[in-house]
Amino acid sequence: AELLPGRARAKLQLGDADGALADFTAATELDPDSFAAWWGRAELLIEDTRQRKAALAALDQALRLQPEHAPALARRGDLRRRLRDFDGAQADLEAAMRLQPDSAEHIYALGEIWWDRRDYAQAYAAYARA
Image (cartoon, rainbow, N blue to C red; front, side, top):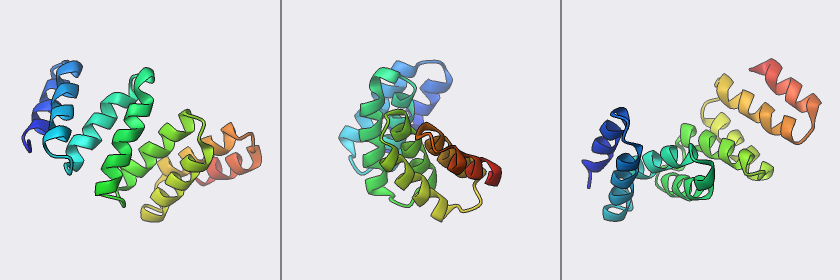
């Protein structure tokens, strides 16, 4: 099971996204505590707009295993924003920013949430800080 995420990444580099997803999925089934498997699965599913809820579930599992993984928090925040869960998105981005306070990417993503909420003053403040 521990080798499957590596094989999945190799398949992805070779252009076999379906094979990569199958390997990441198999890895999560064989080892539900594999952060690499859940993270890889989420990253692939996010790209398919029809699979965003499945991607969110995979990110939830990854963060269950590593709750202070700032990139996963930020990615879930962005996904929640796309799903119009602005409160959840903001909570995730703020948590990521506590872990990586100088990340322009996280600050910019928070600005995107404010923009989608139509709070342009807050969005501007975030963009200016990024």
